[in-house]
Amino acid sequence: EPEVTQTPSHQVTQMGQEVILRCVPISNHLYFYWYRQILGQKVEFLVSFYNNEISEKSEIFDDQFSVERPDGSNFTLKIRSTKLEDSAMYFCASSRTGRGGTDTQYFGPGTRLTVL
Amino acid sequence: QQQVKQSPQSLIVQKGGISIINCAYENTAFDYFPWYQQFPGKGPALLIAIRPDVSEKKEGRFTISFNKSAKQFSLHIMDSQPGDSATYFCAASIGNFGNEKLTFGTGTRLTIIP
Image 1 (cartoon, rainbow over the protein chains, first blue to last red):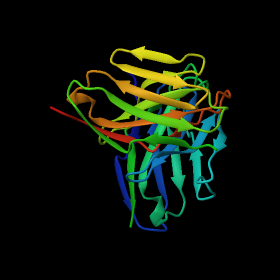
Image 2: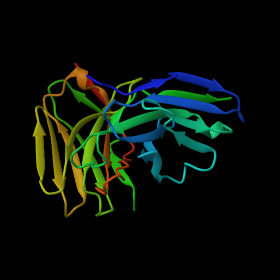
Image 3: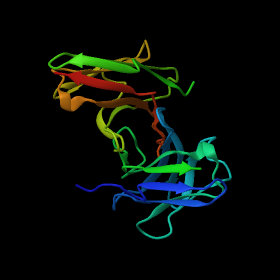
Image 4: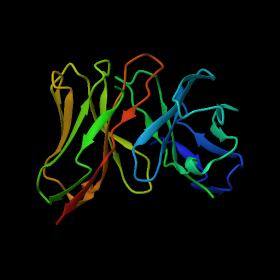
């Protein structure tokens, strides 16, 4: 069964450093998402991406964050200057269409980001 | 208004019993209500979902009950098994094409004891 993959599984970085989290969505999917989950809290939407542009972003997704689909398979989340509060599990998700009523968002296993 | 409130935070049920998790929402524009199951170290996985035009949906041991007037929906797990031990999240989204962000509840840690 196709699945969303994410690398690395765990990333440790120093505050102020840039990190890039990588995702490979399911191959025939067209809509891509990033969510994050701070330890013990709920999953929060960050950004959705379709047709090489951002569809929607949350208030969490400020100028320190960016997303890119650099080729036909990868989808990346970049945090330019990490803060302690960026420590969380970051999930990538993809769906075949953007129509949630008839389609499913499939989540990857996540990247645990630890900012020291 | 975008929040989805979920209860209880944790739940312990004996094997064979019924597990019930409740969610409530405010935004009447929500029109898709999925439940996700998450095991430790894994991403959330879709379990079952419902649209507001039906009041109940059943898939195997899992049932969603939906009360549109009360803006509440719940997950029932019948004959709960130890393998059901996981964290469950309710979620909601608005069906605008290309704008399907999920708003999650706070999660319920379910433990099924023998």
